[in-house]
Amino acid sequence: MANVVVVGAQWGDEGKGKIVDWLSHRADLVARFQGGHNAGHTLVVDGTTYKLSLLPSGVVRGKTSLIGNGVVIDPWAFAKELERLKGQGVKPTPETLVIAENAALILPVHRDLDELRESRDDGMTIGTTRRGIGPAYEDKVGRRAIRVIDLADEEFLTNRVNDLLHHHNALRRGYGREEYDPAELVAALMEIAPSILPFVGPVWKKLDQAVRCDQKILFEGAQGVWLDVDHGTYPYVTSSNTVAGQAAAGSGVGPRDLSFVLGIAKAYTTRVGEGPFPTELSDDIGHKLGERGNEFGTVTGRQRRCGWFDAVMVKQAVTTTGIDGVALTKLDVLDGFTELKVCVGYKLGGKRIRRFPVSRVDQEALQPVYETFEGWDGSTKGARSWADLPANAVKYVRRIEELIGCQVSLLSTSPEREDVILMKDPFRGR
Ligand code: IMP
Image (tube, rainbow, N blue to C red):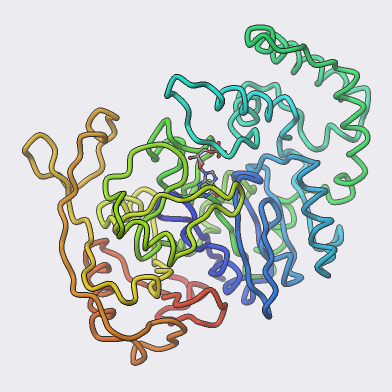
């Protein structure tokens, strides 16, 4: 038995969609365990592009797809995404798509609050996706959240909504906003409930059965380790734990059931939203990376910030999330650059350091130390074996392996699913 957890090793947008699709082909079940519809996973299947935000990528392949308790669910976004997929011929059923009964909901009051906070002009915004993710997680931890199963009982739901709005209306008054009417929210939830309730079930039990039957489970992480609420560049992070350990807590399996952690890293670095980014390039090179890599957010359409590969950050992610192998993506975007750089350390106050500091003051003052590489002529696009790669591209990848202290298990060379060089099949375990 070997279950695989996929996590981003940078700030998200590492190209997880394609890798997850490649792996889900080989898996029996695909489960999400954190985040919500802030994620954006793009899959290209037989020339058709599917954009998923909330549903596990396995739905497109007809695999059993599970949304774990660690995910926050906007029921309207769920219904919309399901409809859009149906329009593309993908029709999940309650047998193939199960949502955890104990997952917390994202409600209009959460979206409002996210929007209000992000509309400030005092330079203190995070650059969130404005989907209500943070406020929904706050309510979950504050024990006020409405959970999916609460939609099944109107009377109970009404009590929960009253409790929740007691808190939110106080906030809304503080922001000078109109109070939210509990009856209106209950009515809206009762209206959407039939779209989601048929899919609700005990995800932990489905997973337990799968483990007992030796089925292959793929745990699909969203965002990236550097957006983790504990290990990331706080406060410029998302509001969930994005590290691999969350796959257990956010779906209801034991940590022993997570056999292989595959970290996805882009051959350069991108970030969307505010926060520190030591290797960011605001010049023509950054521009070129963005253009060649089509670096625009799947969810918000925002232009992503681009920079050189930061081996210090990826190495630290390898440690904090426990990565067994890396899938290196978008190598082809670096084709044609005469020179490439990789960050191998930082200078801080005249000293050389090899870890990313926690202090925000230090983070802002970091100067990257680079190792320079010769670029390569010719194309890596679509390469399916090492022999297809220019020698300098092989050198670049091998040096990255040394610097991050982890083997590259998979190399992705185009958006097409089969354009992959496989060194180690994650489903075969460590
Ligand atoms: P939130 O998750 O919407 O609260 O946003 C918090 C931070 O995480 C912001 O910097 C977002 O840009 C970033 N973020 C959230 N989801 C993703 C994602 O799927 N890819 C990349 N960045 C993300």
